[in-house]
Image (tube, rainbow, N blue to C red; front, side, top):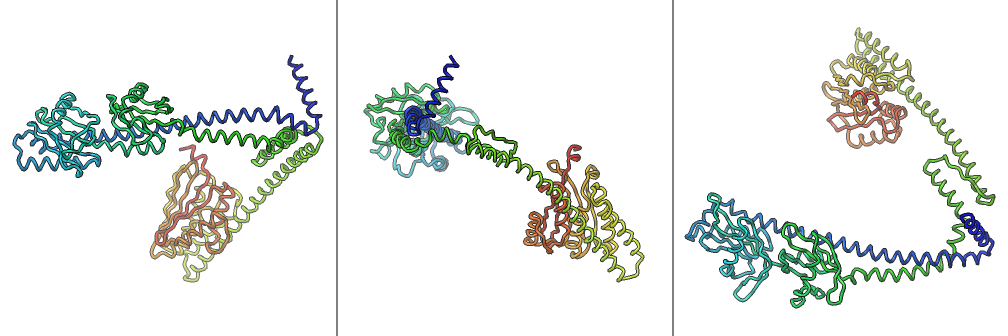
Length: 606
């Protein structure tokens, strides 16, 4: 069965391969392109539909959760404010005082005014004392309040809640005799701190328009309408929109129970039909207040862009089939497959992989290209090997040249010290100076290609400073604080002495009075870091920038001498480009030269 199927496919391919090109394109277009692309377009349209619906649901869910969280935080702040009378001794005192005098009125007014101004949306704050007297502070837009009409309701709610704050849902209060305002209230029984008896009631009236500012953002993002329903199923707030059926009184009783019946989880979404139109409803139930924040979005608003895109997708698909797939069928499959293989291998070579090999299957032009490509890879490997060997030879030559350049530069400075001392006086110290010079020359010249230890490098620095002490008695102080674990560390020769020499002649010699030179070391990320620091004259910002630039780029010049640059170049050649010198300095504050080298053994020993 399988062999028969393979034979049929092979014969069909041979038949198609022997057809004229025009017939090949027609067959491929009809059976392999038109139907698949049409089906893919259909799936793409469905996927776009589902994606837009899911994104709209997620976005609305996030917005309702944010709105619910904002309301929760607002309510939590008000509940905390209801406990403020417990911490005000004057208020506690006057709540138990039966007589209302000037002091009581003043204290209550100031306290209530403070509470009223804690939130912009607070319409009024009331405080009822032990004897039923009501004190209040109101919004400036309200001329008169009638708290006596609500006192009985307050007592019932506060007694039922005990000492905990309680929320009274949306209700209407009378203001200015003939006006009304919708508010919700938060009230709490005030207890005496000393006797724990109930001595009053504190009430906040919050304007219901608080929810408008919160829901406008939700509506703007979701293009829907927002409802807020309290824990008892009463409508707290509905967006003021012409296409929101739940804002009209005659529809509220009909649709609100239908909506709340589907709110079964702390958060979620569902679909429903209102007045013949399909809606997507997304809701969040607050854990703190039990209020439900619900957004209803017409599905037509969500899906109308998708429908337009679907129509455009169908038209575009037909155009693409007519103009693009004519070329992209047989040519792409029969001619460009070997070329694509070659391109893929070339990309691997571009990223540094030279272990590739193209196996040409045919002896046509593409096969010849493959053979030339293979020969080119072999030639590139040979050239890279030659370049690598040449680079290694160049590095060795550069190391020798830089090493030889350091030695005469150092010997010249030392002989100059001897010459100046001999000219000034016939002093026996010249013998010591000559002896030390011999030590310096022997260290610099012998075994120039070998590495030494940090201990030997530091001893070389001490000998060099002894030379300078003879020329400049009492001028320089040397402090070496290098931990013992760094002393056996191998290092190339003459890395510290040129740095010290640079610090002496460019920093400390120009300083008035004695100067100090300190050498310290520490381990950082497995590397040894050495610091040579002086308290000399330092350098300005432009000079420092030019110096660090020459160290980084390897630029040559006479402005900074050859000492630091040669040390930096030798370190980079020996250890790698990520190692070397860096300089920090400020005028009058000295200079700090940091040397970074490899420290595998010291790092393991920590």
